[in-house]
Length: 322
Length: 291
Image (cartoon, rainbow over all chains, first blue to last red; front, side):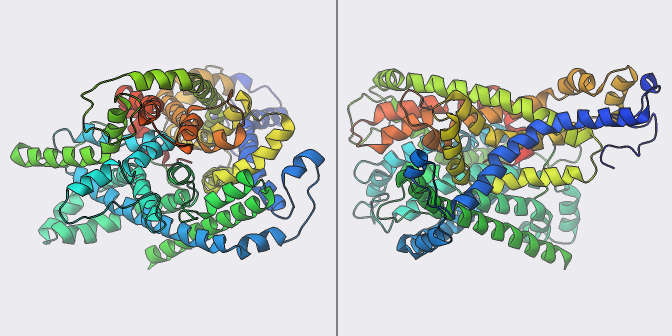
């Protein structure tokens, strides 16, 4: 089963018997074939195990240890049971980070998805220059996130930022909002920047999904009187369901682990106003050098991500079945 | 999550494709489209505008760079030139490593009769997308510290391939599944072994998928911030993303060198869109994964 031993002689695509080798004993041949197959796969499997499997296991272990700078000198990391989890969860910053993570994720995804879908629908019409404009739209997504964060910091600057200067031109705005330095606005500002970063990805994938919908459906719908909004809700959205699932699941999974944008814009501040589970984990490990507590938070983050993905995929499957 | 749109049906519209809006309606759409893109790209315009302003100015930036100055770029290159080179070496290294590892695996998953193992491995590859970078960095830091890989090219190249390898496996597998079996079979009839068939037949046909994978792996590694931040501790080994972060970390009294650095760090992405647009489009829809 594994290596195609059931393939008919002379018919198999790879590793099956080929005329020039028919003389070899089949046992040795199958073994060699299996070795070749393994050689193709082993480097990748090894890499994935070392750079994804090992870190996950290591974090689970580390979370039960007092793993600090001292560990690097003494080589000792005493077992502390659930103490790291208890300490992390008891810290008032944790509930703040948890809430911020929720608001950041929901806000980012809602904004990225709606605006991305709107742009995808608009470009689906195809008009002169639409191809060029669509590829230009990708730029914010392709440049390093930290470069984008850098320019947004200057745009959102309270005194000299271009956003506040533009707002100052409007008659009904007074004062200059401190986008990144006030505890009430910083999270909103970070969400806005993250929406901007996510629109290209959402728009491009959803556009691809729209292209796959056969035009005949719209033609048939039009005959039955379904045009405009009716056509959108009764043809476009149902047909787009699979792509929407991909965009939303990937979007949430990626947004949960966002670090660059927040570190670049606010470093989690002011006063933890933009601290998320991911940035707090970074902070504990690499600023306070308590890797055990950082690992505990990292594990909580994976758990959140896992629960969401499983729940969403299951709900979605049930909805499709009905 | 078993999604992967193979690279296909790109470019030329097929029969029955939606009619192109022309005439005044088309023109109206173009105007709205240009406006939307102008708003979306305004921050990038601002980046370039600030980078071209005379240095030593932390006050409000003029709307247009009338007083054109390259001083920001001079400072940026003097201070960050070495970091740009570091990023270049690391990113190219990550491309080579990713392709060496991902290409044979993609082929094996597309063509070898591995039965249910194909879906098990693919599921594993997709699951890697859920692992937060901070979890990887957390574990790698102590491992790298033991192995002496902190502040090394090898260490960064290995870590920065973490985005490119799963992406490339999925993208190239989708492509290689679409290669007609008869082409590979012909190579076997000619007496080629699996390795020869792979190198001499499959790789040349898969050229486009290889290029797309390489370009995106480069961009992922080039834009990496987290591993640069956690796995390097010295100034001598500092990718450009971290150089930029250390700029904006302190008190800022001059934005033009910072924005010049941001522009320089965005050049690969811009160059890519200009020279390799079709590969980019294929990469975004084909892989749909970015760590």
